[in-house]
Amino acid sequence: MLLAELVATSAEVSATRSRKAKVVLLAELLGRVEPAELEVVVSYLGGALRQRRTGLGWRGVSDLPAPADQPSLTVLEVHEAFEAMSRLSGPGSQNARKEAVADLFGRATAAEQRWLQAVVTGNVRQGALDAVTQEAVALVAEVPLAAVRRAAMLAGSTVAAAGAAFAGEEALAAIGLEVGRPVLPMLASSAPDVATAMADLSGEGGTEVAIDAKLDGIRIQVHRHDDQVLVVTRSLDDITGRLPEVVDVARSLPAHRFVLDGEALTLGDDGRPVPFQDTASRTAQQTARDGQRAVTPHFFDLLHLDGRDLLDSPGHERLAALDALVPEQHRVRRLVTADPAAADAFATETVAAGHEGVVLKDLSAPYAAGRRGSAWVKVKPVHTLDLVVLAVEWGSGRREGWLSNIHLGARDDSSPTGFVMLGKTFKGMSDEMLTWQTERFLGLETHREGHVVHVRPEQVVEIAFDGLQRSTRYPGGVALRFARVLRYRDDKAPHEADTIATVRSHATG
Image (cartoon, rainbow, N blue to C red; front, side, top):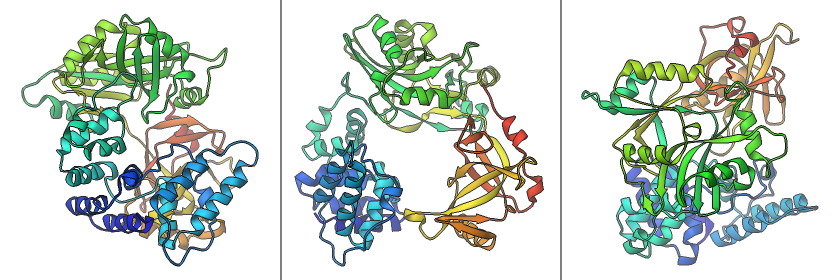
């Protein structure tokens, strides 16, 4: 299959808002795929390369040769080119990768170049990538969608499920939970407050729900088969060698085979969580080093225990089994109640202890691996700040031609400019907002540096964020976590923006 066919379909899918139309378009393409191409095409339709690491980022695909006039690349040729890049390492690899990019992109048309840039940088925008692809697979293979979704959850990818789907329902059904093979984690939806979450979960009958502390750590899934232990992240990356203390805890538990879901967290001497970046930095290292503070596991769910799959068991059964297996010091703090006041008090105590918030859980619900449903609902306090835009970066991929990533500044009287930079964000922006801010900031432009447009510090923006972390990258010494735009404040002047002292007052833990 030519890459041009896939790129054209992706563009059509992106252009329609109808989910049904998206599924039909993807299904038509999948119906023309050869067996040897299936996994690559499914992965590309899901907006991802088959390679987890290629050594490429936006910078690596920003300076490209002139595009080809006619399409000639096949999807397998593209896959093989990225596979070769992923194996490059050592002296000379940077130049070799640059040459490989020039060769591949030089054979691509302009439309193909834009799509390849998007898939490399994770910016393919066609709507509900994986979920819609699963629907298309089910349609073409003529198998139940539920069977495809479940197989994708348990196999850890839509790609694996697609191969089984074309082999028939029996092949899909044969994919089960296997200790040692990571499954996609269950995800939580969001609610603005505990009362809303309680009402959604317990209804008028006042059914009891479980309320877990939401820890600010690294999501981990731990598999043990006898003495063999596997620890993976939310994205299913193997980090077993980085967390020997988690491996030791897993081996200490009184069972031979299990799969646990939880968080890896670093605590200070006072028992409070250290800043998230410290835990993230520790878990990012290839091996643990002597003298480092330990990262300890805190588990909140149990998916398998000594030959018994618990995925379809109700939450109260899984929690009972978890409590019997894992000692209290390695379990996430939990309250089971039907009382909204007790739930709210628990949430307040949890946040005061330095944690992110809480997750409320339906005790009758199964573990919906890989799904973000209504059975788990997270509640986190949202912080907001009024900041000033200092500069804006031109967008890429779907946002090409718009000013997108805004540089955020707080008031700081000690700075020569009167403002200090805290970070950037491109999240929370609609197409209408992008159009407005492009015109607005070009009108405030003072000068440019490459793709960055510097502006007069006149526009105030209201930013929501989840917390602060230390930063040596920005002059203010702190950066906002998960910052997103709520709205532009035309009713506020720059001198009314928040100060760096106000920003630092949001620091916790």
